[in-house]
Amino acid sequence: MTTATSVFVSEPGDRGVLQVREHDVPAPAAGEVQVEVAAAGVNFIDVYKRQGIYPVPTPFVLGEEGAGTVAAVGPEVSGVAVGDRVAWCQAAGSMSSLTNKPADKVVPVPAGVGLDVAAAAMLQGLTAHYLVTSTYAVREGDIALVHAAAGGVGQLLVQLITARGATVVATAGTDEKLDIARALGAQHLINYSTFSSSDDLAAAVRSAAGRGVDVVYDGVGKATFDASLASLRPRGMMVLFGGASGQVPPFDLQRLNTGGSLFVTRPTLGNYVADRDELEWRAREVLGAIADGSLAIDIGGRYALADAASAYEALEGRQTTGKLILVPGA
Image 1 (cartoon, rainbow, N blue to C red):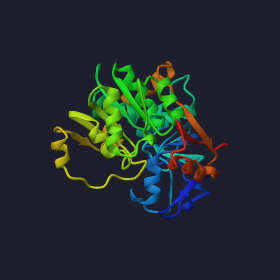
Image 2 (cartoon, rainbow, N blue to C red; image 1 turned 120 degrees about the vertical axis):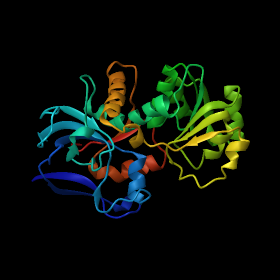
Image 3 (spheres, one colour; image 1 turned 90 degrees about the vertical axis):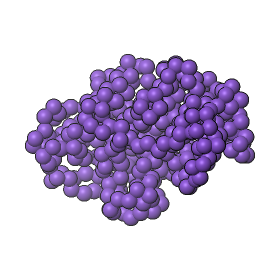
Image 4 (cartoon, helix red, strand yellow; image 1 turned 45 degrees about the vertical axis):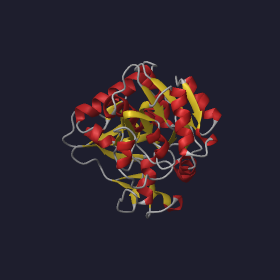
């Protein structure tokens, strides 16, 4: 056994249920690798699990994403060796100084990409990748609405959509955040805090775009959902991939008819990294783009494990730009 320091959720609830404590970590089992964690990503899925929206038996170690150096390899593992630099996402228990992970969940980190950057890139980078390549395959000439465009996923969406020759209408809650979206390639900028109704926000989107948009990427949820639907062209697609402002309540499907035969989908990353080949493809493209400089990752804040509650306070309060990470050695 080896001792690790980890962020635990003691019971479902608010940030007060987070506990940082030491515990024993066993040697890696068959099919596992043990990793000294350099950094772990802070994500809204952690909030949903902490709150019990996604039920997980407690207590459990929080975190889905990270990067580090392989310290030990269990039986029946090939292709991964001690000393390898690896990253992962959708692997529970990542907010720890030391963790065991399934070997088929980790991917190599290319030279020139820091482990902190890799940790910041995995979940949101792979999410942005599947959203623009698979959920709705963005094409040259498309117009896409991206809400929270200065956030972690938002910044990546703006870059990937622009690289595919499409136009981005970006929304954010402050002009400073819109400046970030502009620098990343967004052509139209809307401060949604200046609108008192969903209809007014949708009208601003349509005015900026010159028509209804082809696709909306909405990770905000409840606060923007109505405006998102109203911003679409006939047969446009609403991609709801998160709920930073709260979960969207049930709605009348007839609205899709009256809106112009609209599509709505609620995708999740797990269905888009369904096998090892797909995981490797997406990770290779995202991390490779970071390595060659064509994709920028903004780390908006670094926190020690002991300060995990502060990191989530910033995330849940929508006070952040870019990606927040926890650094076990800090």
